[in-house]
Length: 564
Image (cartoon, rainbow, N blue to C red; front, side, top):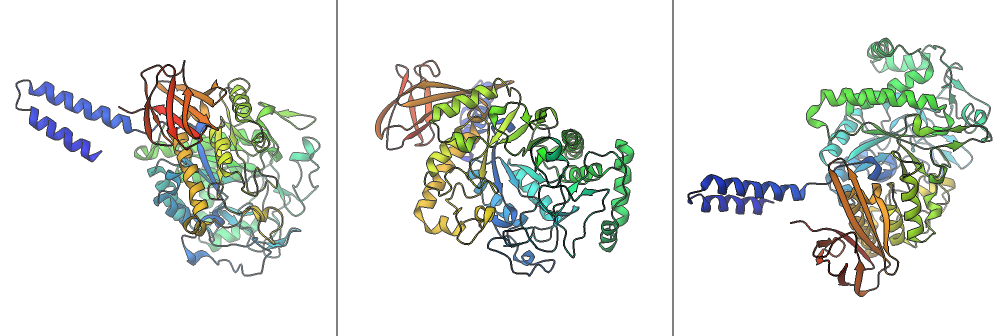
């Protein structure tokens, strides 16, 4: 870019001696502006997002001083204690360009609010709340993960790099009860019965497992704050400020002081204060759906307030985003989740998107079957909404390719299937998911294998493939949000086209291509004479007789309009 600026300035100087100086200068400046526009990134759309999901404690250790806090020194089962990953580690990797190189434009990290201090044995060995889903105090961050200032820096750094931040939030339950983590008052939580998952009532008004107190979200009865929480705030020197803020919140909203509204206030504070872009909502189907609509309303208010107060930091006009974990939901279900005795449309209750549990099974189908299925559903039953696709996650015991034998196909399926994509940390680096001695979901939660990226060529090679595909996806919203159409069966070539207002995007992709010479059919999509850039091999080709000719040993082609 600097070279083009210099050339343009020299051009202006050289031609300024001519009689029509003003016109020459105007023409040169126009050329500069067009050149700059050609390098602008595509606008961001949540429907096409490339989201990276990581466990905060398992990604990167940016500050070793917070590795041991709150006297969490008891021995745990394999991979069930705090290891050292933190908020600072995520920020460091943003600064290093790791996410940008992978085409990631949104980061979702596991919950970072303060966890229960003690450990418990949940049947798979002694465990601390390293995963973040055992809340003790929604108003504070867990010192093992970092401070609110660390989170503020993370969000600001992400935004400066064009990356959105998704906070993982839990409103369904508190953490388990221990000797030093007392149960919340009975007007705040249910301690039974345990969920049976056979109908709506015994899925929402129950505890997920034994000793995981369930927040009373269905009630509108006002309750007092727990004495233990008040004492904690007093000891930390913030009792007065917390009470004052609650008074302002309830005065503004006129909500009753029921448990869910306290927690909604505490969660949306992070949006109001820091500009968090969205929530990933945990255990969504275990809470009555009206709660999620209320949460979304307050989060949207907080997001608008933050944007108004920070006009120079606003990335775009996208509204606040919420994606829900309705466990077992699949894209084939359309807009409704069936409890057996009741169907719920979560898309009409605050959620723009739901996590799609179906792709890991669909991944075994041929590419065209997957892509056409998802495109058809997203442009019919789910028009105006989307799904978040994944192949691997932190609590799915049967992910696609658990032994990491098909990393390239995994990349193709995940990053090219219509819908938003969720890379689980290590999908791109062959991180081991079968850890000896680890029981249950712990085997899915090993520390990120940074060392292997430096020492094992295969891991680096796989990462390079994911990076190329991820960047292409990020540059082209048509991949995730566009209409799919097969252009040829053999070799397999398809197109994606997308328009949103004045923005238009179109690409062609070829998969399972032969090595060496190959012709890709693009007739009816790109006209003869059109210059295309093949992003995987970084070559420019011209459409002739409805085809483009390539000569390389890659079995994939990523075609986009060549820049002028």
